[in-house]
Length: 229
Image 1 (tube, rainbow, N blue to C red):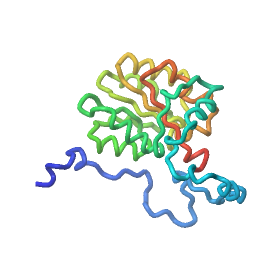
Image 2: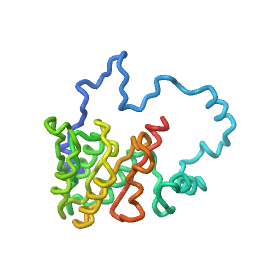
Image 3: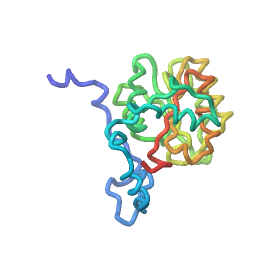
Image 4: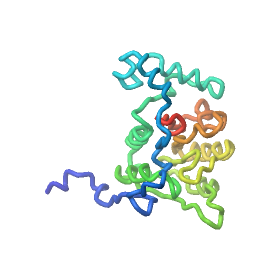
């Protein structure tokens, strides 16, 4: 009886992991966790003591000026406005909110495999039919831009990309990103680019440079990798 109240798409969902074991031995550092094996610099503690309590009392999106600071940060790369920015509690929260934007009954999700497993699992939990194009060893595990464009049909609500890609570290060229964006425009689809590791690329290589020209583009950035937060 109680199952009638539960989202039907959840019953077929299984936890996804590319690791062979869940318990990581003590002598192995899992770089996917964003851990910092060196600890915090002593100077940071002194800086924390100088911070006003208000900085710790609220989530960043409730603090005045933060969007303006981000706009200035990106000003040498692409012109942004406050309407281009939406702050979330971590990039995973952004992914959850993006999935909630789309109706699973009106289109499937397109991605590649392997990919950030939590994003794929959550899409399936939300009821999306997920089409994943596998990276192939005989092709050097290159991101299949041609195949992505071929499979980007009007039945696709959004395509999920990672730039750089997790876990291979590949970065798409700007021409390849624009090619995918142009195809998505023609099919009425969205392109979601997760740039959690984007701080390891020059800012000019970010998909964000296309934001002023493409209203079907969503770029996710995070402080958790490059800034270690």
